[in-house]
Image (cartoon, rainbow, N blue to C red; front, side, top):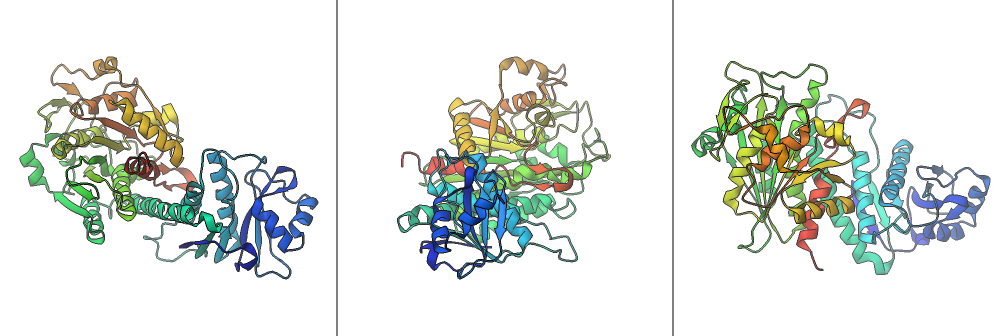
Length: 497
């Protein structure tokens, strides 16, 4: 897809289709008013007929535009004539691109940056056009023998005024980086587990490092992890024929002596539950248990494209969790890299077992902050559904920064408590702690488990089990939380500017 900014007046624009906004009560947006004058009041005539009410999600495609270089006009409802909420703006964009997909257009021009959006500038609005359009146009075709009847859109032009060119260009650059990071995340997550193995994930990190000078990849093999004493991580991989990998992808964009931001992503390329076997129904979706790891790679790619003045370390513990004669068993006691011992009460609570050793490993980078993201618990779906990701952490400032970034990026999070009382549920008669805390507060006790290995740095945990992929007829990865993490990095990079 080719995105660009156009600053020339609408009357000189040549396009297969121009997208403009209309409000309730037959009110035209600024660009729609200018266009209406150019085409002799055609839009006013159409609006008077009542063919489009102007509500959010309303669209109307005009196929014949007399005496104009613009072949078609797509009217998109914006609701009441007042500043839109961020969510309603994105709904209007989604309605627009869905109408475009149905119409089989090859190019469009978008003039929806002229509508006011609460607490949003032109850079943000431009960025959202790229993100929403790219998300809607994404298709997974890597494993299909025949190409399907797919979208034909090739070119998107975003209109702006001359004095807005710099802000629009900044939004375009940010939008492309985030959208392409999301696409990488979705492509990796949508691949089946027989292709996207731990070794495959490691190869993708090496490929990224080869594509960007500021990225450097290192892969720890099983022997390396054994030498480091990662008994918890390696126990999860014992039941699989696929060797575990610990992927390190470093981005060097800041001062050499500045502490890095460390991102840790769970990379379980398939989770059968191990000896505590999952039910068969829906188990195919456990290929998505590596969405955290995929999102770390996507975010590092976005940071490299944006050339952010930060140092960032991405860590992805990658393995499978399979039943086998060598697999760890309920009742086994593991010794983690930190030296803490863990009683395995349920082998399906494996994500925290690979993350805890990675949290310990992260200390060697002397991090400014550590953020882990994992499809960790089904309990987060019960608590929060599929709207926000769960957020827990040991540092209020870090958690608040992530909440703020989520609000800006429209990739929301909701903070849950990490109170010491919950640690009582993780007590074990035989080890330092158990890997599950019972049926109550499953998302919280999972984070409490991880907190035992994050005591030496500022840390936040994102449980993305409800937001990393869609199920049902729209089954597929979402690319979240790449927008949230990239916005957090942008805020950190340009704080005070």
